[in-house]
Length: 364
Image (cartoon, rainbow, N blue to C red; front, top):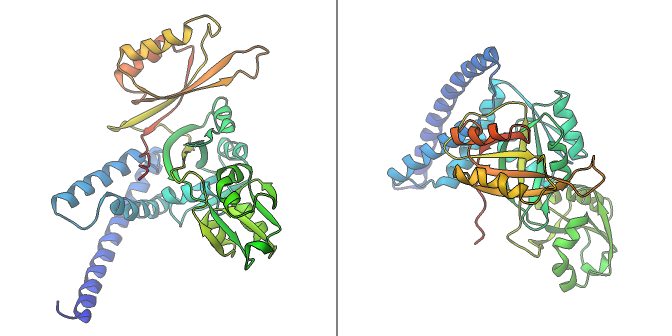
């Protein structure tokens, strides 16, 4: 290929072949959907999708291909999302509004073509799933800077829905406004935590004395800023673009390494993969007895089960200082060593879900 036209002809031919192969793939996908529908099987299989991406990444490395793991995942996650919609279209409920970080997290796994339902609270997402008005729900569960989302943990403690997947997403804030100069800004909208996450930026630009108005989400902040030429929003770049508010500054957060862990909720049990995590709720019988938690954890240690998180929450149906514990450990509920421990504590443990371990983001 000596000329640009030669390259374009070659690309067109390759694109034609890609389209042909994708259409062949989707024909197989339709048959998969029919089989799953008759057997009531789950459409979203995170462990299967991860295995495909790993296999293709290994092939690309062996072939000295130009596509790395991140590029392969980005391409095939969208293919998977289109495939699921052909198998059996499913509705995804998420903590809205449109343009929120949770919306971005949902689209990163379910693609742009899915049927999304924006809801005003985490509680509404759980209730929608319990009422079968949506198949999947996406909610935040913890942030690397601000810690756990208590509402999500409290609802998991009493809801029948399960965690079927997790994902980590970097949280970058933008400062968006229709004002031409900072001096024209008379009020700033954001989620309450958004102001705290961007305090250094506000101080550096002499904005700490400008009226700060907390709203329920950063996406709502963009909506409010769009209606007032003298207002600004601390929000995501996508929300600013979606609601037509020009971005004046990007990455205004104090901690550039901030990330949020989101969980995908549904009503099915994942099959085992080679890299699982399990979430449980623990309500110890003798929680006020000295050493009760230590003895509980020792049983896991003896079976070489490692924990990634332990979080205590107050028992709201008790008047004193008693707690239940949310725990994440590496492994699947069907693993033999996990079954042995859980059988010993079956009256104290509630299983919240086993799922493919998400890839945490490495801060450069």
